[in-house]
Length: 347
Image (cartoon, rainbow, N blue to C red; front, side):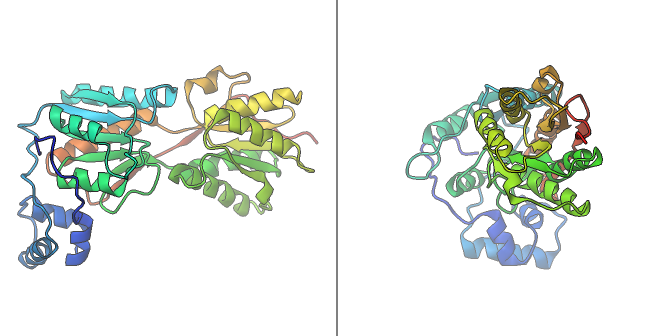
């Protein structure tokens, strides 16, 4: 790991580019870079030639035994119970591994698109062994900076599809969206709407895809006007629900792609003197503490946030030890938690 705060952040060829040039997988290229013996001589030759031809900078190999037992956790925000669940999972796994955790509330980009030097310089200065990014959206130069400085990192629930070769951990969002919608359909609802998060985020897109797949499998007509986006914001979800209620044929049930947004939906329904679930059924997503505290208690899809975070830390430990996984994406199962916010529609 580089120890100077003045290290260059210039982007060079990534390991994924080298692997593509040599016609091998990223794990195989990683084995060659890290001096592993379990690579065929001809394969090793092709990778080595690609490394030299592309000018890949081979930094000194990361030595986890000599590095300080410290990792960074970069979270989107510290204000939500969502982040609290992630922090809890990281803390427990770090304690078991004898690691200390430094938590940063955000990774800010500079206006010229380069990594935020203040945060990156601090990362180098404190000598962290690796980084966990939660709900982070990194720039190309940030990915390149981390790789060129040989700093192991893992993405927890990345906002966008990460570049080839980046290790990430998430939940089975498509299956969760499917399960939530199938539950409402099984109760007899045919007018089922969805209030999603951001249009371009991986998790939101997958949940909406699961919703659409459930409708198609049940032979229920997909209504484009029933699909609304609220950016995971409670107030925006409140407005989207009012818009749905103002339709000529409003839904009798709604799948809301986060528990926080579901609270905004509850408020909108209360404003219109509509009861949950007597007048409209609601299903959330996440299974945060707020889901149990809501009145009525919210039926929701549980995604194992603490388990996702712990899995990510264990993956980071393996990277720190020089073991690159054959599969870079890990998805943990979601499941429906039935409470009191869903019922059959009125006749």
